[in-house]
Length: 211
Length: 284
Image (spheres, rainbow over the protein chains, first blue to last red):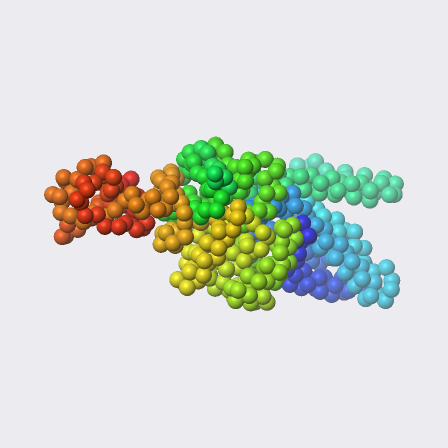
């Protein structure tokens, strides 16, 4: 599995470095703005960073790496686990860089809250990888856009269901640390389910079951 | 008695536009088996099915006596070196980096052997893969396949698109590999002259069906080319004729020597002739 992670780092290192540097600069500037953790610029870079794992899947598809992996002792679980490890590594790196850049730019003050960025990246990882493994590059992106489109619609509340409002109200009313722990558990569950689905989809895709 | 390294029985794979039908094939130890056939005949599909990289629709495959869908086969993949007909190395990776990736992929990886192959094939270790020529690409894939102490080599069009000198060099490598105790090579190609040079057995796949599987020498002894007129050919037993080519000045036919009169003058057929005529016979 570490061999696969090594390969992904060789392939994606320039993107990781570029996004990491830009993220550090963005956080360094946003740290001076009150409530910047909720602003759109704060979420754009983490969103891009979170796509590194899916870009790596796309690269594998482009270079027919999966076809080769299928004739080696590498099992489907190892291949998929390496992608999730890459994604979580990028989350950890982004949070680390962001915290450091925010702390440095504000000369030791608290900097910027990195939890929303980390949450977004984990959500992207959980929702983007299974469609890529099931449908491949092009259709995978289409499914992801459709899925997030549905979520956006729910947030806009066109049917008057008040789902987002109810969740936000519950989070405001619940005592600490219940909301934070709940979000963490939800993300962990989502990621575990996502990894299970990804292994299943990847195994079948690699064996040509979706051709 | 020779033991079979690969045993295939009734192997079937169906796609919407192609079917590999009921394939039976044995690859004995110490042998090179040439898998020949037109593009889309099922050669690559067969190789992937041997490695259980594709879902099959029927039949069984045993490699080193182990069913390839059993758990035991997973660790046996260490003993199989595979070169696929398409590149698999991301273009930003160098040969040295590939070595590090392979070292984590195969428990039996031999870095010294890999570096030896890179040197022998004159492959630069620090050059990115995108700067490699087709010949260098294939050599790199072969170097990787030969560097984890494999006992079986599965080579899918490994000599395709290469110049004669590189092909010559690689054929020598494959022949040396097969000569080692307990080793075998399955080489798919549509360059029949390559197969004729190093193979012990020839399997001819045509439109997803195994048209023939025979020892190469038996094949070359069995068939010959008869050059005659149409009238003369009409007098030849029809069981002997396996395809013909009518020209301005006469007819050329692939004939089975066993059915020919003793006094008939039959030229030696090469493997390419045999394959071409047999594939045409099927189209009749």
